[in-house]
Amino acid sequence: MRISVLTTIPLICVLAACGTPPPAPPASSTPVPPAVPAPRATLAGEQVRLAELFRGTPVTFAMQQDGSLRATVPRRFSFDAGAIKVKPPLAAVLDRLAKGQLQATSRMRVSAPADPETRGGSLARDRALSVRDYLTAQGIVATRLQAIAATQTEQVEIVVSEGR
Image (cartoon, rainbow, N blue to C red; front, side, top):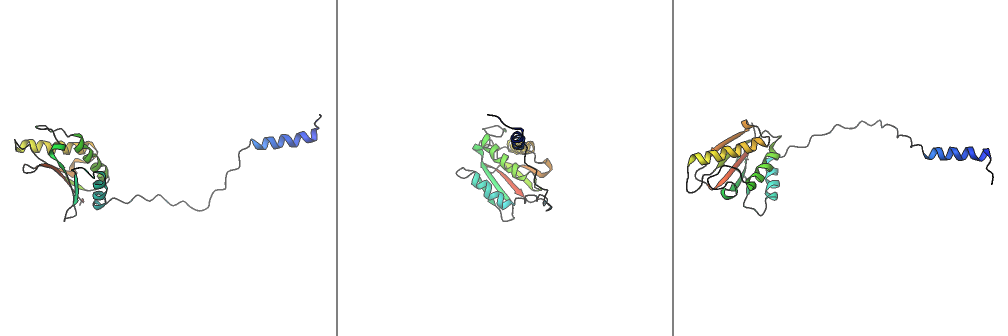
């Protein structure tokens, strides 16, 4: 079978067109709106989010009458006896609190207990400072944090209030 030049040229053109990418669509004349920043989370929204994350645990998140958010973690889940190093359950709470407050202007007051047998203010103070240091390591600016000893409690308490 013989193919003529007249049939070969159109066949080559068709094959060449198959390897050519389609033309780009024309540019739209409609301007693209600028990205809108995500709305800042409210403390009430944070309370709902955190309470859901820690449902079924002894950790509590509660809104206070003054509009602040209060988080509490029992001492036994926060520190080993006589130690100031933050235990993993408390670290999980602090990580999530810090993540939610990185871009906020909120202030945090941290209080930590001593052990029942010591009831000493220095252990409680050192634990509160340890929690503060943990939060600063997570990116919270130290000037937004206040650490206090809480010798009359059995839990670590973090109160988050709107910045002023």
